[in-house]
Length: 345
Ligand SMILES: N=C(N)NCCCC(=O)O
Ligand SMILES: [Zn+2]
Ligand SMILES: [Zn+2]
Image (cartoon, rainbow, N blue to C red; front, side, top):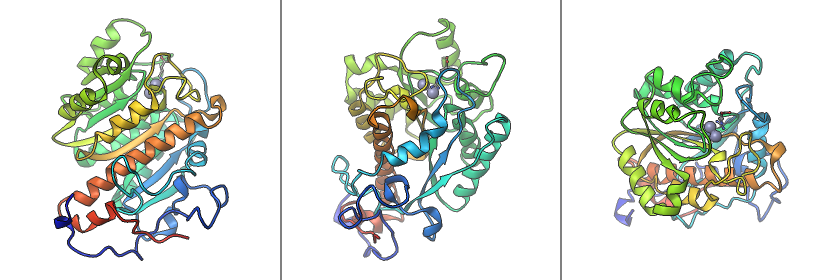
């Protein structure tokens, strides 16, 4: 971004930013993500954070229905400037918090339809939706919504697990099966999708063979040890380039030391530093939506997992901010990458 890209002044009165922590203590005020305004407090949002308190798809420990509130509570310490990407994620774009949608915990099909409807409504108003889960089942209805507009979409999936299994106890819609269903439904670009962070025991070797047929390339957690972040980012960008990308972050991609508060933890995972650095590598790719799922606060300690999830959201918002400020026709916003151009309470 050079100053040549700046075509006009930023209207600092239009964009509303977070509550000012030097005036109102961080632990005061109703809880929204990063203390941002609620969606009904702004005229429109470039990015909407939406909570989906749903965990009826889990195979092991329940509790991810309390994830959205926990991530919001753990996001209070985030500050307005991200030096790693040289961006003000809340100034280059309007970010607002929708709150949580109420979904039926006893009828998974109905819950999926509710999520699809909510995401579709928010996107109609031009918002990119960043969803806070909830268990991983909710990625399926989000992809259904996105694919209706974009066609088959590249899925970048951070997870210890493949989540391309077929059924659990005969049930097709679970947190271990969303990406098989998405692939079967034609929602996924089979040439451009990728898992990152895969590890741990499988049911059989065939799980990996099926997974490849369903359209995913695998970058294993162990590859971080051997190849390092820079080379993985290169592989990731090569795979994803050339079209819309959906980013799905299952917090159990992190080692249990970095994210104990989750339902199906697996040893040998990534560090939060590796994950945040990998996400920064998405700058310039066409990210059209994202989720952070599987945060289950009952197993968390000292907000370790909630803070990790909040920082994942912050990096994703930073990537979206840079992409928005450098998109053709939106170069006037480039300056917001460097200046804190928002009003605050
Ligand atoms: N999506 C998550 N977190 N876990 C899937 C694990 C499925 C299983 O129990 O085999
Ligand atoms: Zn997982
Ligand atoms: Zn998962």
